Image 1 (cartoon, helix red, strand yellow):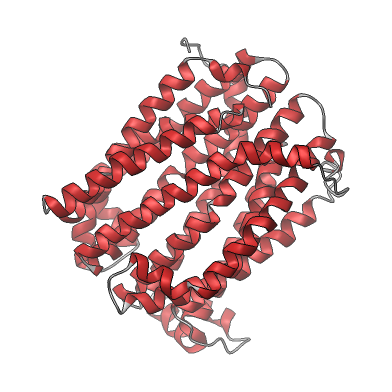
Image 2: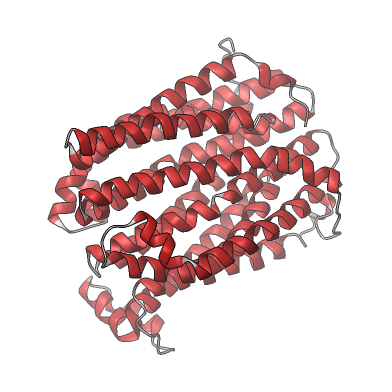
Length: 467
């Protein structure tokens, strides 16, 4: 792909679509960080259990990324082709697939939560708490998968503000319930008095919340996820949305198969890659529980930092799909350059903060001096990788928006399993570099992936894909 100067109109279009997604994604991350901050006050064991439990649940829920990709890719292409009713059709297919996927996943987590936790954890104190988190959290899988279908639909029709509103409100609900269910009514009062905000505790006095600790964090997330479905469904009644016929349910086996072909590679790679990350956690867990808790802090901070690239990438994917539907690949190419510019600007800024100021960032999420000491060099590694991650993530979404879901999925899985995991184990365990060696191995995933995505997009083959 030859260099093309940025177009101000398209650059503005990219960031206008991206900002609501970025805020939505950041609010989701803030929810996770709030979970972590609240649970961390219960000790390193509770923090490690919640971190691993949420990661293992995400292994299952990440199938929804494939659903979202399929719905968004089809919806944005049909938007460009002015086939509006087929946008709603794509949503219906996504919901059907979400239900099909959620039922066996929920049964698996319900009956085998202990066995799943034992596969990835060594500490006998952490395993039962992690299993409790999984056992409750698994009931949110259906809500999350259906939410992904809605996200793909609203993003594909360029209504990203709806996605933002739903996510922010559900996250507020989650944070509110977290405090009450983790600490209980009496505990939450003591918690807010300790941090100098006693008046906030009044919000939990209307009901006698039980002390549920790790279980409470899981239950709060399930309830908040259920709310998302209610609010997403409410917006399909909006006059601006009715043109896409989202209320009139349509079913087509041919179209569902098409969305499976688009979504399966992404869903599969998300699940397989997240299993890889769970194994990464297992590697760190063999080093020690404090190292596992530290990695939970670093991962959550890193998660927050790459959300802007996800938002920009999703916006670019919608515009690429729409412009290809309009048979205007030149504008699609301009959208890619604009997206790269914004992703590098935002993530690069955070990368510099992580490199030069990790000692200011980590204490926000944990006051444990050992976690802070171990986390500083790990966060600096993440800071350097921000620049590569901005490129890789953005171009990943660009290719999927154009309809090429197989290639980026294969490359992501390959770099994860054949570079990242072996090098992390070799550096951390064999060379005894500990947690720093484990996170250095992360570079073997991020850097090659970014380079390969850039080379693939530069060929221009994505312009000829039919959806």
